[in-house]
Image 1 (cartoon, rainbow, N blue to C red):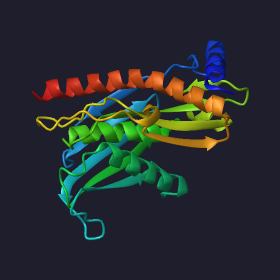
Image 2: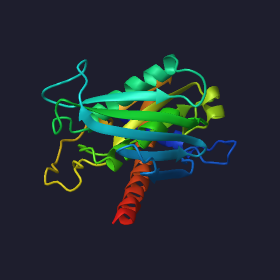
Image 3: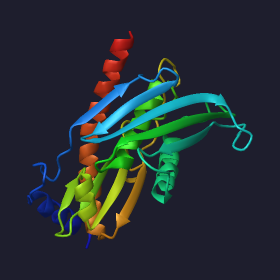
Amino acid sequence: MNLTMAADFALSMGLMEIDRADGRKPNQLRPLSCSHNFLNRAHGSARWSHGDTTVIAAVYGPKSGKKTNENPKKASVEVVWKPNTGHIGRDEKEYEIVVKRTLESICLLTVNPSTTISVILQVVDDDGGLLPCAINAACAALVDAGIPLKHLAVSICCGLTESGFVVLDPTKSEEQSLQAFTYLVFPNSFRSVLPGSPLSVEIGPFENGIITSTTHGVMSVENYLFCIERGRSASAALSEFLRKSLTKRNESNS
């Protein structure tokens, strides 16, 4: 199927409606919530919620790099995932890797070479879309800590039902019944974010406008492309929410 046919397919899918347990439409996000700077000992912190899914992110650093990961040319990022119950498992280790690589791609690591930026992610509640929630919390906490960023980023989950519908921001019960789902991270802005510094620069566009994509299960190329388009549309709402939450933070700190 060529791109034109894929677009027609996506449009036809988007016009279809399905019943969701919480009454949302296929392309509707759960309520969002974000608060900043509430952990006294952290250099930056944020609490992010997608519906009943909540993650707290704490950022420490930049601090003197550890001998095992020191780099004379750039800073290192370490991510520690803390589940709400039990011990860290294979999924959590995978989450750590995905978050680490995502944050490395958005941070200006050359500003503070030979240092380490530590990001601690504490899961409070998991009702689906846990990894995107954690990435959003981490990004907000990095800003709160004043870490120089190339740009902000927002993340969302998009899933494919057994009946072939594509749904946005699924809950835990929806995730468990999906044929496949993908976690997507999109750039919030193409302008570097370096608060209070003249080092803000323009950067080039990302390929397909995606920073990170992680898929679980099997879906066709057409459905994956539709997930990307639906996720990209949702990223605009997420970006606007993030900007407003950061504006409120700045106003409260002034």
